[in-house]
Image (cartoon, helix red, strand yellow):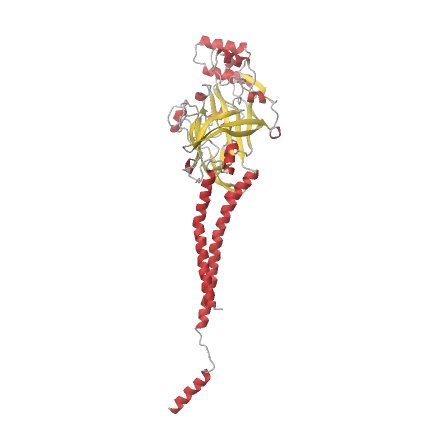
Length: 490
């Protein structure tokens, strides 16, 4: 066997192997990206991603915390409110899209229905627990009507007394959440229809259960994956009319469940929230990992609920109060309702001075979304918001007593969910394990090819080196003697 030819053959094979590994290093990511694009387009043929989008099969929960008022009589006398947090009262949230219709312009419209089921095992108590909170019907209406003639305010106060409505409510959790019978509500709906947001029982989440979030039309991503999940219109609108500037009225980003793939640390998470009546945007905070899957954590910037003085682009959301409060009265029948982070996290510290019993921390009260950057799929979500009532003394409405002007926290809630179970396994296999195997293969081919080239080159070098030494034959001795004799004759 000719060692030189074998060595040359191995060198050639090694070069080809390195070449294949190098090609795989360039082609592999392209193949992965192509599969990501193919599988993130909203299409019934994409079984896994379409199911995740349509039915959101991962566990999703809403945890509700009440601010139980400890000193209602003292508040009426003008003293600082004292509250204690009660909760969580946890509800499993079932989300399902219906009326799904695909359109020729690469969009799809749908209505998303939500239902809530109480989870006693995850809660601190039962829906029969009793708590005390401000009565929005009385204290909210008082602020709304403070500019009406004094005689009208006296009539309103007399109406409250007639229907035995006081400034504070002591009700069960279930009643406050999903509604309670109120003679005043029945009276107002009969004689002043449209004044209240609900026509049935009055409750903080009465309009949430068994309801939908409106008609969304979003892009499927076909033709341009950068648009996937982005909102084209909501209830037929491409912009809102609640706010004071075109920028604040824009409907930006997605519907808040998934985002376009191929995110970077410079990416943001814009989304439109019908419940907050506006678009919001989260920003990158840090990288992380969840059960072996890489993620980027996005959080709310401090400017999200800043007032127009501290952050000029938010001027359109005013009239504003302190930073950290979003005035949603314009889309809540003009009731003096404000949204904030729980416990006034990231808000003006003066808000904490007005109420005793609040202790904000980022870990417990900051909102975040953990995104798999390659696909734009959320892995872990925690959206935390607080509902507050602006209340004050209004002359003529005696129910307000001597209440000091205060933004009063009523409840805060956390909507959370994370990928787990079979979906997590499939997600991990398709989008973590397989790309990693492909990456290891390319390095394996390159390494194996280089090893073949080095070994073959050493063998070839050794063969050539041995070929340069003189080789002795059987006639060498005779030739030497003839040379000696010839020299002696001379």
